[in-house]
Image (cartoon, rainbow, N blue to C red; front, top):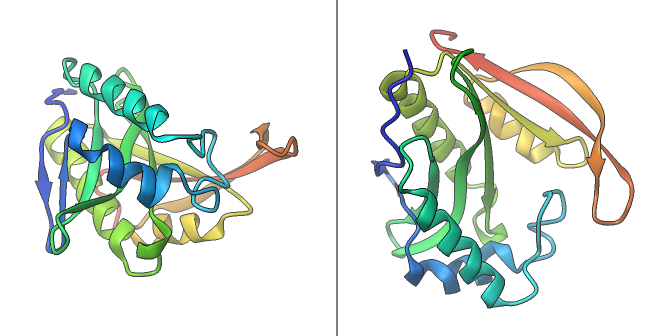
Length: 184
């Protein structure tokens, strides 16, 4: 049974995964939301100015009133700075399934940070909330995102063709990965 608890803080060796706060606006804009390279394969962004980021954070803060909202700021403890986000994008409580999305500032790529965050969030969603299956997908032009999924034990399941349009107008194909509770 799904037991929604909302976005509770999760701590790992290097990270504090926590709810976004208004004070995170500057970090979010400068570290990833305003960066065209970071947002290249995402369905949103880059934010044109910091007011767009402020509005997005306000929206998340309001969503925290609902226990089925899972949106974490990824804070690097050593810098006390928000460097990315990870969230449940879609959930189906009847099937006990959810889809995760994530984003990380490019200064922090290739350091195992997103793998650490994703592993912790998956543990929380499986063992605290009760999801039995977690999926994630990535634009095939962004294989680094798929490597993160593989590192946490997710398995490639299928290609999804013409899922959406990229901001440049081209059609986007995605690779879908999944993991069930108890999978090694």
